[in-house]
Image (cartoon, rainbow, N blue to C red; front, side, top):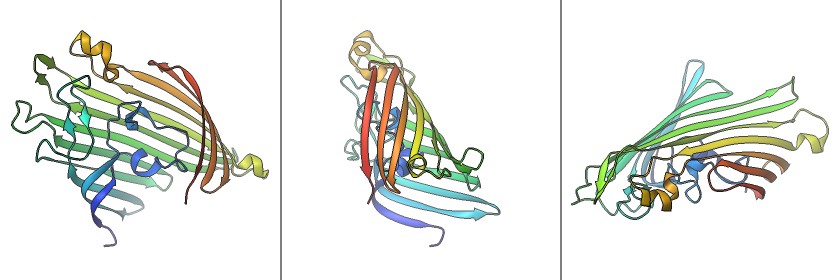
Length: 275
């Protein structure tokens, strides 16, 4: 339909901006991912993909526009033992209960250069035939995207920002009582490309800055606090300079410094081509 598409398959999670639109290497402005989307180093709050069914589309509302996505999928699983106690597992197998996740995102474009979005996901995550079977998880997020050319600065400004919060019900894991199992984080990013300057090598450059962070709950006991990164808050900034060889081919040079956390500064290099 002109305003609706239905699909049943594995699809990128329609939650926020980054995973559904920005994650390919030739689209994202910097090497690496924000903490809230990085399952390797950051303890991602949102899964990368869903297995299930989705409705998506968009429509005009006078001079403004809306887009939307709604989905039902295999829900995340609650980790009930080990160092990752209380963390949501996003492996898409849904093998511990028959419950599903439901969620989606609504985007609003008051003007063509600006989009504001809100996302949510709900799932019952506890395993069946277990005292934790009624544990629920709720995720919600806000996002902003702005992109506009300015004659005064002879180039384009691109701004992206997201905030995500994950809340898991209080639970008792054996002898460990885990209250306030809440995580949140996000990022703010700004890029400038001097696309209106006549010199070719200058107009192909792009400067990027991103600040991202993630906050974790307090560990329910000292032994977990000393052994698991899931209870460690992290903050960092990344400064990058890109050179665009073509519309979908880019070389990225960046410096990243974790101002709160275990890692220090590092230089990053990435080459990407979209096809």
